[in-house]
Length: 261
Image 1 (cartoon, rainbow, N blue to C red):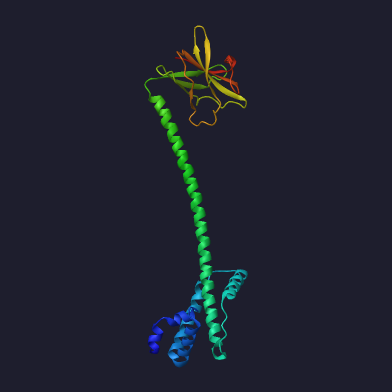
Image 2: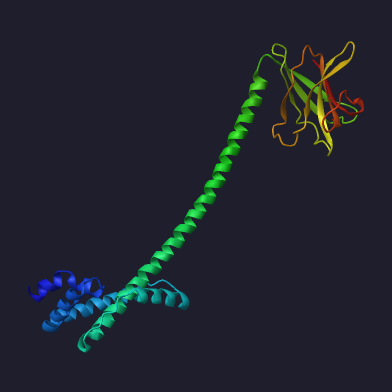
């Protein structure tokens, strides 16, 4: 094999990177001794490796660099060479070590960047999922309210504010077929601590109130539209403010709204 063919075979690159067996290293070193062109090619490859190491090496602290360097040197197999060849072996070893350091540092940086990207995407995904769930809930709530309002069988009963709270208002949707009742209490103030609103179905002659629901989750519901118990032949609806848990009979002094069917 001519020196040109030997150079073009790619074995010199493997030699520089420390990927050859001891027998192959000896063969390359013999070719370098016999052919100056082969020796010059090896020098050129080594210079390229050094330049590459300097240009792309990541910024590592002195402590981290020494740790990586020591780990590499501990794992390298030391081969005793003859005095005439020891300088080449040492140089090649350091070149290979430099390449490994560069590769390790680049992989470490890439791993950190990847982990940061994954964490960021995970946080964004979590926020997006929460937003989607929130939108779905709001959509369902809106659809429920619209279905109540648009049902022709539901009679809307306006409940006007009374003496204790003239500015308050509410609305009851009463289905005389199914006897279902929904109340829209968006016009009522937030009840004070220890108090709840209680909804009453009334018969007027004689006046007979029947509790059809305690709105104990007033602040938790965004729509402020609540389904309460069915009412049989109700003639009016009223809402009073009662102690937590509700009352057996309405406190008329705390009658907030009232409306006739």
